[in-house]
Image (cartoon, rainbow, N blue to C red; front, top):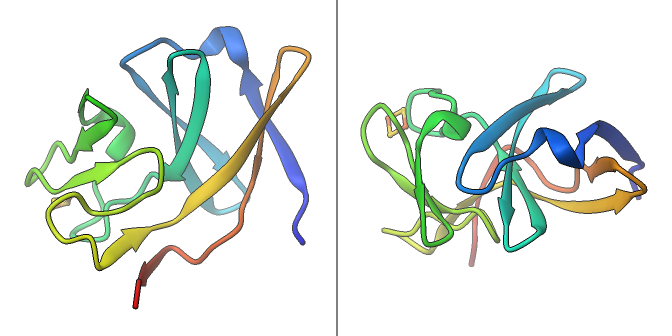
Length: 110
Ligand code: FES
């Protein structure tokens, strides 16, 4: 099991806006939905855009470059659910947002 990493303060997150944080060389996008923080890989598997800068609505972030869409709650590609990007466990301890990297950058589901 990997450890949790403190990545920012809860107050640093705004509803309906993504935020990119780095855990080592891994870039992670955070999204705040109804007071719950979600974390997915920030790097779009298509051509590498930052997903945290995408359009965000109804739990879906749309990549700013070519509009691939990912659910921020589980990393599933909304237009092809057989493919998903990394989705990471998040916990809030005091004001600290902590992320546990738990999966590879991109993967196919069975
Ligand atoms: S880089 Fe994200 S859809 Fe092309």
